[in-house]
Image (cartoon, rainbow, N blue to C red):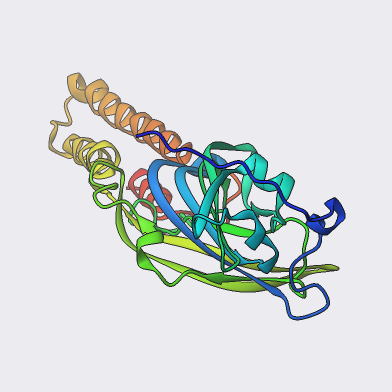
Length: 287
């Protein structure tokens, strides 16, 4: 289905496009919603995760009424044309990685009553520290943070869109993933870092890791190796069995160390303390 975009011509001065609608008054409110279309997993070792999302932004600007043709109540225009003719709140993803954002599609809907809705599909690679203390029985909470790149909290305030159709995750998205989807929530908070004062919107998912793969690849093999090493106590103490006893213990220990090193490589190097899986591996080596 082909979507036609209207061409707009406005009478606003170029300088006015850089000024927010409520200049000199209350902060402008930008409503937001994030919908996760696809999830490409987490790279725990580099503190990153990748998602395909639809970001919806909505704000009010009475100055855009002259953009809409007289024959209709709303018009959809390309993002590039909207930037040339309308005030844009300059909302960005705050926790994106360097070169971690690619725009797939974008459009701006302008309504006669002054409502402006920007819909954008983005492929994001995001940075976040993950708590792996309970790995592989852990819960992860990947989050996406939005804020204005230009305006402070005195000028612009983020607000979540109440319509549940615009936010959440695609049904069945995590059916074949390493994680089970539990819930999501959208919140707004203010953050002050020195002279940087921002109103930020946050979308956060709660995911539970499917630990069965680690049971098969790490936990059970280490238990079986310990049981194998215990078989030396049932070997005769005769001289011909001296080397088999030593070899069995040594091979079991070296294999346990290899599994322990492979487990450590699954985890971030900058984490604090030890993860559950590391304590389990150390306890197996001390048996």
